[in-house]
Image (cartoon, rainbow, N blue to C red; front, side, top):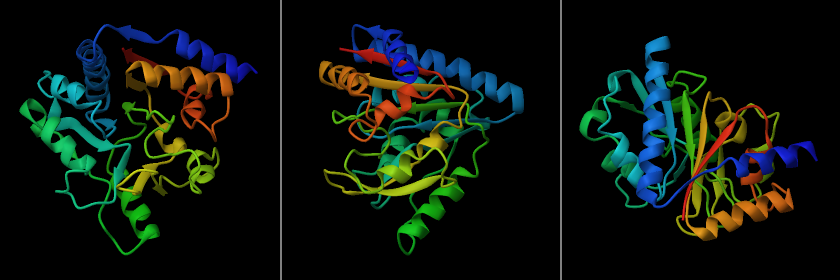
Length: 241
């Protein structure tokens, strides 16, 4: 029950904005502070970002910020197992919208290397993450209407492994309900190896999903609940209608 109450308080503390643009700008402001602190403190900073369309406004707000981008290492929370130039590639989206302007100096580490199978892809993903300083300075997550985070989906046979609190795996192969089905996702334990975490969501339907997740208190139905109820790292919710 205490963990459920913690999830409720996390949702109650959500920062709400009138538009996606305002939410993106506010989140970019805070990320600038977090990344700058990391770069100054240890000469390198690390940032993990989601795919999809929601973070595009955030990326376009962040890439022009005055940061020591040559000290910043960027990677993804998850990836589709497609060619790097495929329109569905999260890496392609990051290159198009974040690794631009001043942020072109950042070091970008894609997750998907198209190796020889599931375990090879997981190993390559883990190796890419090994190039980033840890703990990560910041992790930004999105959420789907079904309550998935990164590429950790309800009903996926890989769900228990992805949400395990004891796994040493950095990455896991998962399968999405919608195409492209084959995905790579960081495990929850890897995502939590961060100093600062944001959950960035837009739209009333997603807010309804968050409320349903907290009420159900079931991470198998709503993987986002596993993020909200954990106590290792505070989660800052940025929401716009």
